[in-house]
Image (cartoon, one colour):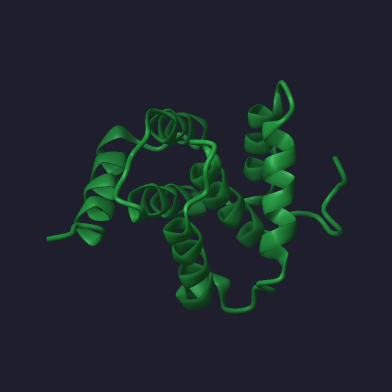
Length: 140
């Protein structure tokens, strides 16, 4: 796997979490890609982020998913570069991407569970984050 051209930034880690959730079911839907791009374009945490890095981060996530211990490596990279105060933000973004296409595959649900565990998200906080994502992505 080719390394990132520079170390992962906190924003790269947030993008990596979103890409991982999107790719968890082996198919990245257009609605998920649009949601990732919209979040990167509009959230203050990404104000100074180079959007061209999304492709590089995505390739890193895909490459890691091909390896035996790739998910563990991904979480290690995320924990190394993401301040703990942004762990809940990462989980919120993951939930938004999972909910963005209106479908929650078992693989996405398992990855969300793994993210909760790896980032030590409190159950009550996780439930509130999940409820917010569900409310934002409701349809008629």
